[in-house]
Amino acid sequence: MTLHVIGAGLAGLSCALSAIDSGIDVVLHESAGQAGGRCRSWVEPSIGEIIDNGTHMVVGGNNALFAYLRRIGAADRLVGAPTAFPMIDLDDGTRWTATPWRLLPSLIASTWRMKGSPDATIGDCLAHTRDYRRFWEPIALAVMNTPAEEASAAVFRRVLARTLWRGQRASRPFVVRDSLSDTFVTPALTTLTLAGATVRLGHPLRRLVRENGLATELHFDDQTVHLGRADRVVVAVPWAVAAGLLPGLPTLPASPIVNAHFRLPAPPRTLPSGGFVGVLGGTAQWLFLRGHVVSVTVSAAGAVAERSVDELRQLLWEDVSKTLEIKETPIASRVIKEKRATIFHSPATEALRPATLAGDNLFLAGDWIATGLPCTLEGAIRSGKIAARAVETSLNIR
Image 1 (cartoon, helix red, strand yellow):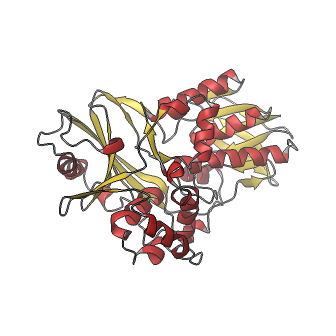
Image 2: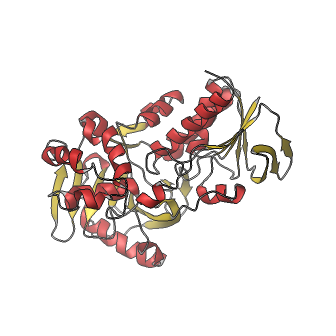
Image 3: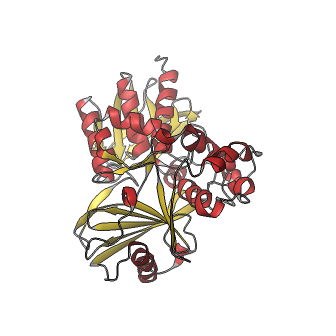
């Protein structure tokens, strides 16, 4: 009885951990030379510092994520900030801080405004509220990676029910202390190895053979694995890769993200509370400060991603310099475009997201499957646990 997990991103790591804790033998296959998928970090030569592929904020209500970190002994690698979201409007220079207490009337109203039909968008429900532009729109854009006027209200409602609607503790923001890899990936690989899992990096699956609803063979460059009756397979790769392995998956439109990292010439004159700040009226949407590097995130970056790297570098640095009151130019920078960062979370797309069960011995994991949540770290980790539970059920493991 062996579980082959294809893909060592967060979904695959989460699935492997859950399965091995249930006594299942696990082989984890990853095509790249490093684990983590889109949740990865590296020393960027141009900057001379460790940067992350993209900057992620998590909140106290991300229960699956915190359980995962406790399991791998890395819960202390997140740094908590006050339950407050500092914001700036570059159009007029106004600065303010969004807190649960200041937003209480709007939060209360949102509990009934968000009770729309399954086809409703966030804009349908909240666009006419007082705090829409100043809070709901930027938060929804960050969470959903889809413009609020097109994003599924039903999915956003599930996020709110786990976070902002549950009070300050569930809403408290956290960022990684050192890097994404150091927090979510390296300790997970160590935990899996110590638990007896086999981890094969640089081991891409080229072909998956199915017959009569069963996965029968896994074709790698160096071997073909013939699956026994008790063996199981979890495909935990991005949708575009999974579609190549499993023809017939629904087409899920993608939404891009642009990230930029700037090495600062000097400490900024204006230090954001908690190390981050939301930005309105510019190209940048969120700024995160870690050490000498400020990282910028632009979600749902369809039009922005079409610009050249040089244009983006200039536009985003203008926003950084205004927000942090920096007059000097950056020492170095790196711009990263992720054209398929997540799926596009419209109501129509949500109806297409597949369940984890893809065959009698074949399962799906990934932030793009039907978790009920958007494509976030929490969604990816939760998808892995969903797949592992389905595997356990198929093997009559309680």
